[in-house]
Image (tube, rainbow over the protein chains, first blue to last red):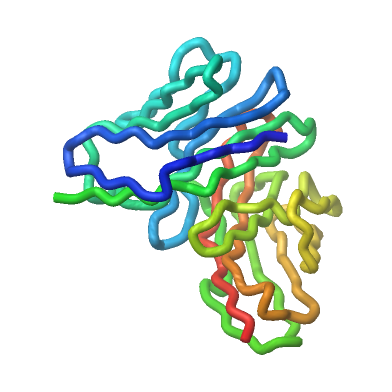
Length: 116
Length: 114
């Protein structure tokens, strides 16, 4: 099992600026996965980015990148060139290998507000 | 894009009522999940299924029950609702069981029990 910690309840960023959302994890598994999901006010969870524990390169998906520091057990999300539509809750999640189904453990989330 | 639907979107009921939250997906995914989320809090897995006629309890104990008679349908039932069941319920599905498995979520059902 994993423990996911997000220490920033809320963050503000100006439009077009970059922002980093923090996530640390704690697991005894050798193989694991880390995710970031976005939850707008409409309620659905939207997959943003994935990082595998054995991936040597940091994951990138468009304006999203994951700053993976394995020794520090951190998996911070970096959003470049913030847009007003990026305002939402952001959840970090960890996956452990159960063999039959993925059991994600979520952090408590960070509410990001993008301002003009 | 993902096609996973939850109904109703909002539901207000009285204590003791029986309710069923519907979740359907049109992607043919074998894996389906129910998560419970209190306002401003993290999601907790309460049920999952990795195929027809298979259901398992998740990490958070729940008085709800689920069934999986058809691949596309994964309803959640509360036999006798209580105010402590007030929460948002999110359904999700995926087509693999690997670590990189991406979940597709529905829009959720916001349940209020008076």
